[in-house]
Length: 212
Image (tube, rainbow, N blue to C red; front, top):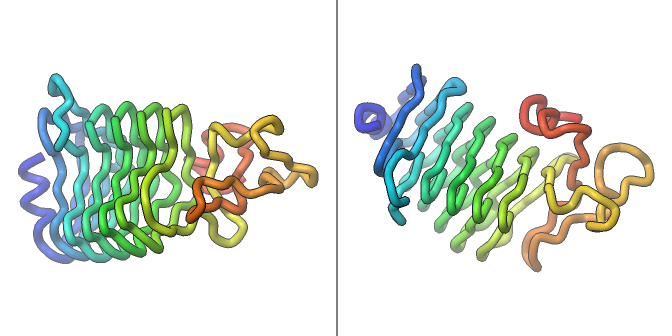
């Protein structure tokens, strides 16, 4: 983790993770702008006991136009943490078995796309974060999917997210025309609405293909 973090402090750098990582503390910390951190399908695993409240798998601090992709983040207190970040992209990443999968703190205009967020206590925690975009994500078996303050975008070009607790008729999801999109929006809270929640035939279609 430490070796990667040093390289992720420089601007315009690309880091490709070649193997799985294990950590008892904060692992990857990105502080430079225009950074790409690509796990290439490798995992970042927390192995400490008990979970440290400040421990995150990947953190972005005051970063601009950076990207995290193709990662598997497992078991951290916080899977992925963004503080005062703007125009960053998180894509094709799995975050599981965390307390908070993703935290956005005072962050704007980031794009969270095509990620699997599963088996966490909380999927997304927003702290004074606005104008972030969440599309093609799969929220599965979290105790709570979204909590916090801020007005954000949850669909784009008729594409929303898959919600494990909003994919059946008795949960409010009705698909009369068979287009695999719920005919009614999923109301997350008063400020956040997914107007086009997805009904994939299976989870892999959302996470891997980016389309149904």
